[in-house]
Length: 351
Image (tube, rainbow, N blue to C red; front, side):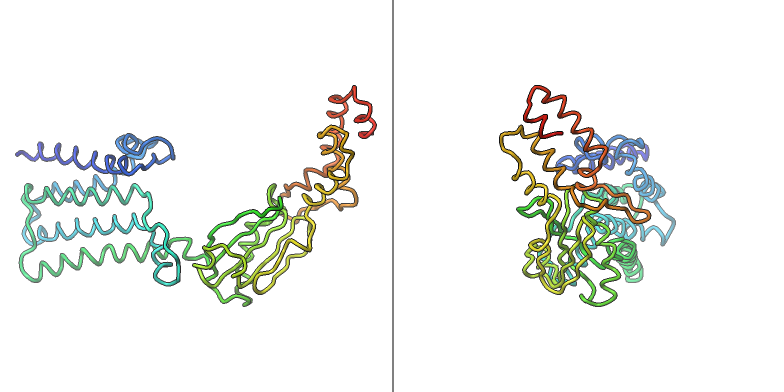
């Protein structure tokens, strides 16, 4: 078979195989929609196939420059095998594997939907089938086998180490495992595993980034936030606040942040704005239309509240800021006056 025919056969198998595998596994396109099968077949920048070009071109060059003169030719299979392992390392979530090896984590997904890794693996595996037909050969003798094996192991090992070190999650002293609300609207819990000794000054300093992420002053849904820290990843994944080793309480209304060892109740002794407004709503005349009762509750909940002011560089946007904005409150009142212009009780309540 001519080299032109072999190149055509190689192109068909190498280009279609990863797309078919991704499609069979239910992967989505690089933009998150549609099947990866069609997306990975198109080699243009707006489709996933463009990510296949680097490995396809490089492996094609290695493959179709066969036979390599004399001894270098015996290392082609070692290079291709190294490529397979590099692709596998790319498909693996190395950070999750590192956590599994160094903590008491309770499982999780170690594979990730990574098209680059899939392209590299399939290209290097399929290329092995063509080496002999293009004049390549297996290593011969102890030295060639040893060098090929070293190439096959050292390159992916170096890649894995470099990838792990550059993974931003490795630089983060905390592992985020989730958050959830409570029965009371506006109350929220977040759960973190800490790689640092809890209660240390270094822990407090590093935790500032976590606190910023969950700051309720910039959150429309959370008003009181309890952040639970654990020294066990398995416990953190269980999201049982009773097992927390340290708790930080954040409040939208400007109440000072609370740092407490163990599991601390951030909610019972603090009234959030939503709770205040709910109480005000329950005190309104039930004969009034619900929209009017809601506006009156909003007005009464804001009575006596000091306007929230944002620190430099922060934009505040939360339930209290919106509810207690005088301009928005007046606009809502005017809309209700028009809506209930024939209801004397409603108009009287809105005066």
